[in-house]
Length: 596
Image 1: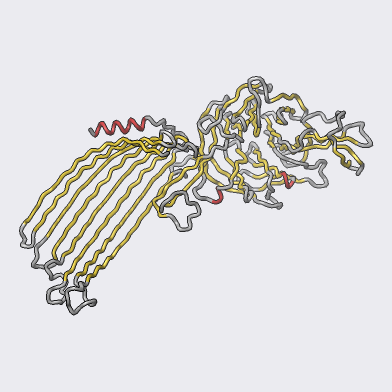
Image 2: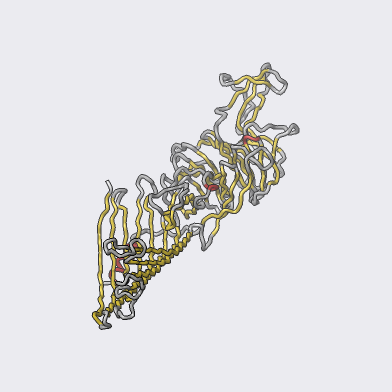
């Protein structure tokens, strides 16, 4: 029968589709930056890019400058306009870094249309500023031909030229729109502007353009990020459609991958993509997993995050994820970023960049500091949790009874009955818990307790004198008990949604209890003695399975067995009774809990 139960339990575990391949995670390695206008400080609107050597580049739009940092976060230089420059930052935003560490930044440009005077007419259009690796200005590249005069001047706005004369400025489209910018290994630029990809060669000359919404690709709803791989393939993240769209070097649609969801190869509002040196792709989305760890520790009175009813403390941490794909969109693996439990610094973070080495850069939006997380493999993962609870208590109870009806002269001065109960207890709980990923948790716990209790009762003698331990009925009971329980739990979260949350939990346990109870008379003339010992054990296992949000299927098997022995010697020192008992009980239960 035991073999059958074990086989059944293992079969239940095999029904769970284990995917324990996410050993890689990220660790915090440092931070840099801060809020302000000084050196190495930022304002609110920031964009990030990375060089081949790992250096970090940041566009600080509101402060009209560009920062360069080493990969360790040390400031190298900053590009800021002064009177000697031949250009002005108007609204610098996204940037990219060439293979030669040249810096390319999206901005806007005012360009005079030749042969227009009184007033002069200027085109106001997007462009790419180029800087050399040392931060010196090289040139500005308009993404379209701005030399032509526009006949329709209805959108023109009045302004002043450099000489202070009246002029007309013609904006090319919505001046608040966002752009995407990428560079290939040959330093050819690709600019995504309002559904069109504009290609510029290494000299800044426009070469071609194509629409991103093509036959087969369908409507690209909301492009938010873009990258180019070593083969010249272009990848655009379509946030609203929850997918990545791939185009060839010739601009033709190749494929799209990803659908809505938080499973493998699916996306929930993807927003970052990077092509690594090995040709693989990293894609970040906004999927967020919340995992709670219910502690055995008592809840603090000032607990700022109560999440459970009752008296136990709870801890929470959040998981973000990066998914890795091949260049043709095949899912490789999922990498999790666990943020520390109850950490104030990890609350308001937004992913701003992924460098070619796979390091992640999160912006703390409250302090405007960048926190760097590096990929790592560790035996003692941050998702490996340990908890130890140790408690030592002593309870003392004194009971005194003075009988008012015995007419003795000692009323309210001496008790007719005096009992003292002393209980010492030692409790230790240790739990080891490990989250393999956002779905699976394995926990091993051990609960050990030792209780020793003495109960001493004194009765008054008939001569109204209190000779403790000499009255026939005075006695002492001593009880010692050991309890040890080991349990292994496995939890699988089938659905993380708070509206349709479902999980499966399987567990096995083994416990032993040893009890020794002795009652002994204190009067030497009284031989009364009772001794009771018991050795009890039970093991079991079970599984519960959420059929839906309202229904849970439960199955449990328990096996209880043990024996006890007792001996009783009466007041005259005769063996009055002795014996032993044995128990062996097997119990299997199947039931359904419902909530409506």
